[in-house]
Structure formats: structure tokens, C-alpha cells
Amino acid sequence: MKAFLSSFLLFVAQGVLGDPGTSFLVTLPQTMVDKNPSCSLNVVPTNSSGEVEGDVTTLSTAPFVMDVHFTVKPGEDFSLVMSNNKQIIPLGILVSDMTMEISTKAEVTLVVVNLAGSNGDAYTAIPVNQLGTDYYAVAGKKMNEETASILTVSAPYDDTEVNVTLPKRRSNTDNGDKPFLLQGVTYFIDDVISVRLNRLQTLQLQTSLDLTGTRVTSSKPVSVLSGQNRTNLSGSGCSSHILEQMPPVVNWAKTFILVHLPNQTAGEYYRFITKEPMTTVTIGGAGTGIEEGSGGGGGLLGDAGGPSQPGFVPDQDESSASENPTVAPAPDSDAGEETHVLKIQNAGEFAEFDLTAGKFMYVVADKPILVAQYTREQVRIGDTFLKDPGDPSLLVLSGLEHALDVYRFSIVAVPEKDLYVVLTARQQDVSLLRVNGQVLSSRNVSWDPVMGASDYVVGHVVLTQADMPCTLGFEGGPKFNAHVYYAGQCECWAMSLTHGQPQPQDPVSSCPTSSHSAGDGIDNDCDGSIDEEPCCVDLATELTKSTTFTEITNFRRRAENITPLKARNKIGCGVTCVRMTGCWGVNYALKDPGGDNCELLMGRGMGLVATAGWGFQSMLSLSTYKN
Image (cartoon, rainbow, N blue to C red; front, side, top):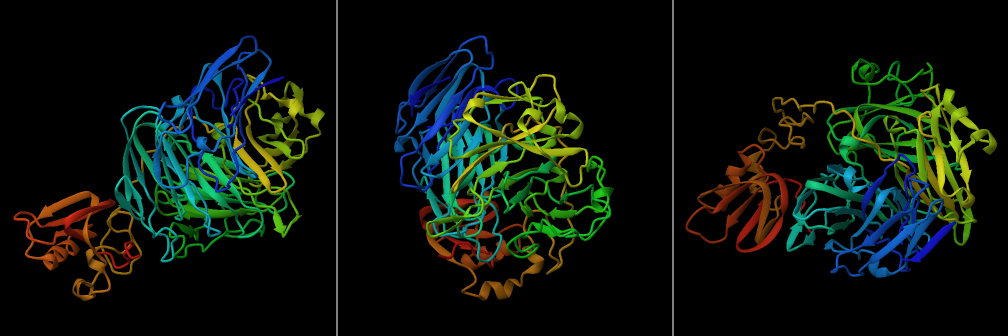
């Protein structure tokens, strides 16, 4: 049975394990569809013998004030539906008070659906006590004019300092060169955005830049969401909002099994994001006897190693992964199977992979990674839908290290859409798995092998509203991974049922410095940039090129490190900068201030602020400040 209130979300109470908690933060980013939202919240008591009380509240300054109390009786779940546009954070780059807090007197799990029309996605929320202070975001390619990346950061505590480091330029045609304004500061690509949030405030960024690899750090734990407001993977067909809650980096894992939406023939697109330099990702095997691209099937997407993906390098050393002692061996890997090796050079960069439908592949990384899955859209010609149901959705894949023995959740199942749970388990354990206490043999589940891990299998179970609330597995039983997909005509939601737990952390890899040589293609001084060192620039030539640098008057650039000094003039200020390792720009006084008239800028940029009497000049040959 189910009790209903009118308002949007999808709130799920945890049976025993998963992502259980008693306090959650929820925000609903803009989906780019001018329709009222239709979200839902399903609550299932963990203890079936007692009632659970809870509240959904906001600040009194929120655009839509909420103060909802609910009680869930034993054996029932609870749904809260939200349908007011004021509950959605508006378009743009801003700090909003529209943050909801869900608190309960017993542990629950929360599934959030951000939906307007058929434009939506779902995710399992991370409770406040499992939030962290270090994250990387995932978004996606800009496939059409209206596509914008979304990033939200929500604070459960007052006086939380948040720093958002935007990704570096990935190509000369990167879609993120347009500056944007936040609280009086103009920010550019590769900047660090610094804001201070109080309890239940949310920072939202929306930009044409692909925010994948954006780093979020904070002085206190925060909740981070990322995705895109509306997109597709092919540039045609059905489009949708994609959204996922990011797990903190301490939860990242090293071993995974790539899965896909059941009954899909288009396959899935994956991104692998790293937090450490020189990370090796092996797909389909243990990293021995590897020939890149062997066996056909899943292929690499994008310009591998090209200017649009500077962080991706196909591996040419067949033994490099197996020789690294931190690489976990693939369980019972079969020789001769298709295998791919990807290397990611720098923290926050990513590699891409296309998983062919019908294949399930083992993945092992030598350092912790975040794995993002993007479901593909249904092909549409005019009003005619072709091939598989579904549209884009975003899911953070749970690692094998995150496997649990039991999950409990609830979701409102719509008859014309298909609801699946995809299970990844050891072959020896499948006979012990349960759905609501019933063995899976009663569901006619078929199991597929995993390439590179012959002792693992993947199967899916079709669920209906009669299965809600749903319990998978049982306490003390075998551990397995579970991902939920909800697909219909031009619609798909996808979510993991857990974001994992903190993992043992390896020592952070150091970047070895090396001597400078122009054109060597190496980040010699370990600052994340290649060939920007003073050795590699003809200072005299660069300084005399009036079109090389863009000057901005009556503005002052902020940076992580600023060195003030007295220079003879603007040229002297610039010459001092280009002679100093790591200096990428200067602020100079337009008139003699009677003291220091030059500021050397180093570290990451932190925005541009209007300041009369000063000017900013970039020392970079490819300025990001050109309009």
C-alpha cells in the first residue's frame, strides 16, 4: 500500500544496506523543459515492525517554502510528489536557497527523480553523514545548441567554503570559452570559483563547457550533483536531462563490470575519470598479452590522444598494467578475450569507451577511478520512434568493492514503461539471490558471462508495482551489485542502488619534475600544463605581438598566488612575469599609485573583478579572455 502527498522527488527508505541515512539534501536543477515537474519520493521503513516519521523542510527564505511531516506505517511506503516550478532552481549561475532537507527518525534511502515531461533522470541520494569534501564532476559532450552542463553544490552546514576548479581547455574549439558572472566576479575556463555557503544554500553552475573533470573541494562536507540540462549522444533522436549525485573521491573503486540497459541494441557509452596522474584502465582482462582494439566489439570514441582529449593515451606497452603491483588481477580471466588498455595522464581528465550491446566487460584500474555510464537515446524520425525505447540518462557505476548483500528500495512503476534491476554476481551465488524473498528461478532470469571475469555473470529482473517496496538479497547472503533502469518511449532513468563506502587510499602519486625542452610535450614543472615553461617561449617575439595577448582595462584578475612589485612600466611588469616560472598574467596600474604597480599572477585563476585604475594582461599565447 502507498500513501501520497502532493509536491516532486523519489524518496526510498533503505531496507538494511545501500545508502541509508536519516538526513539528506535535495535540489532540483533546471531541465530546460517548460512544463511543471512531476517528481516523487518513496519512503520504506527499514524496520518493518515500527512506524517511521519524517519531515521535508526548506529555509524560510526559499522561493517555495516546504514544511511537510509524514508517517509511514509498517509494511507500507510513502510517496511525495512535487509539481511547482518554484521548487526547481532557475536557469543560470547563482546561489539559491531552494534546497530541501529530508530528515527521518529511522534510516531510509532516498531516490530523487528530476522530471519535467519526458525530460528527466533519477539517482539514489547520499545521506549527509556519508558526504565528503573532495569531488570530481561528470557531465557530457555538447551535442546541440541548448545543451548546458549542470553542477550544484549544496551545504548542510553554515560557513562552508567551496572551491570549484573548472577543467582546463581541452581543445582550441572548446565550448566553454565564454565568461560568466557570479556575485560580481567574472570567471573563465580553468578558473577556481570560490564561494561561501550557509546551511541549505546551493551553488548552481550552468555552462556550455563540458564540466567533466571539474573538481569541488570544501571546508565542510557538501552534496554535489552534476549532469546536463538536455542532451543526446548522437546529435539526433530523443533528448533528455541527465543527472547523478557524485560520490566523494574516498569512495572511488578500482574494479567494475560494465553493464547496459536490458533489451537495448545500441550499447552504452562510458567515461572513466581519474583523480591521480598516469592512471591505467584495463577493460576486458587483467592487462597481460594486450593488443589495443583486438577482437572488435567495443571501440574507443572521440579523438584518442588528439587535441580534444589531451588526457587520453592508448597504451602501447602490452605489459605495463600487469607489472604494476597495485593492479588487482581479473578473476579467472580467460586468455584470448577482447581487451583494451587506456591511460589517463592527469587528474580530472578522462577516457571514453563504447560498450557493444550484449557484452559485459570486466574493468580494473591501477588507481581509484569514477566510472560514468550514459544510456543511448531512442532513434526518432519526425513523430516515428525506431528501435529501442529509452533516452539519455547518467549513472555512476558501483564498483565490485561496493557490492552489498541486501538492498531495499521503492519506485513508482508506470505500466507503459519497463523497470529493470540489473544484477552482477559471482556465478556460484546466483542460486542464492532473492527478490522479495523469492529465488530468482521463479523470475526466469537468464545470466550472461562477463568478458575478462569468467566467474562473474550479469542478469536482469523485470519489476512491477506489485514488487514495491522491493528487497534484493538478504542479510548475511552473498554480495552483489545492483543498478536500476526505467525505460519507455523516449524516456529512461538509471541509478546505482549504492554509491559505495570509503575505500583504503593509496599514497598520492607524485609528479616527477624534469628539465624543460621546447616541444617535449611534457608537464615539466607538474603544474598541469604542457610546454608553458619560460624555456619554451620566445619572450621577445611574444611581447612584441600586439595580437597575442588580450588586455582588459579597469579590471583586476584574481589568482591563487599573487606577487606584488614595483615595475618601471607595463612592459617591465610583463617581462618580469614571462621570466618567472608559473606566471601566466599580470595586473598593472593604469596610473602611478605611488607604490606597487604590478601584480604577478600564478596558480589557478579565480575570476576577474571590475577595479578602476587597473588593467589585466594575459601572458598566455592562447588567451581564454578573447570574446
